[in-house]
Image 1 (tube, rainbow, N blue to C red):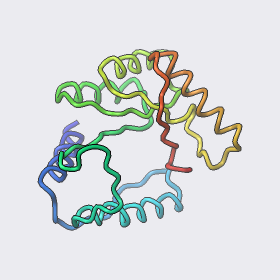
Image 2: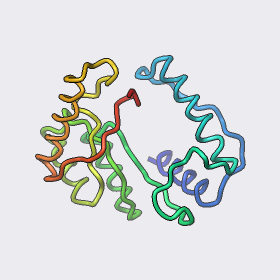
Image 3: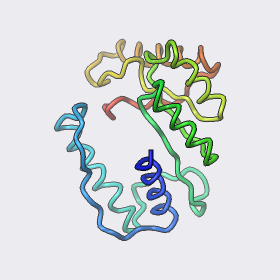
Image 4: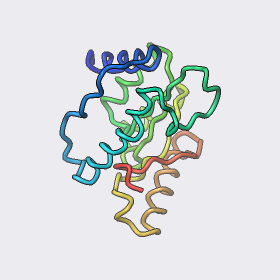
Length: 172
């Protein structure tokens, strides 16, 4: 948990104070990322993160007052019975709200409770598909099924239809 807090402390510091240090390579491996996605993420970082660090914000979309320093925390692949609770505890302790892009198929049994808690504590509960497929591998009816089933599950638990969708693996 201390690594988690250190990560967010560094992010807040960089956003609030700015940072001119060298951008280091993204490290770590994931069996979920194929070569194309790894290349995509590297290109995205070069196109977006690097210019931002150097004060060039042409690729950044701002909604709201650009003079107010805000960030939006988003989390994918929830809910789960362990990490989501821990994350909610940390967010509550620091009075921070976030957006959770949740997988509809995992919203069963014990996870319904954490979905309700997420929503009741004022966080956004949003759509991340029903069972996390690579959307580009699906036909139109398959995509619609993924979106609709997850949205219906979210609405049945929270009473609110999710208005945003984040595709798994960033595949669109």
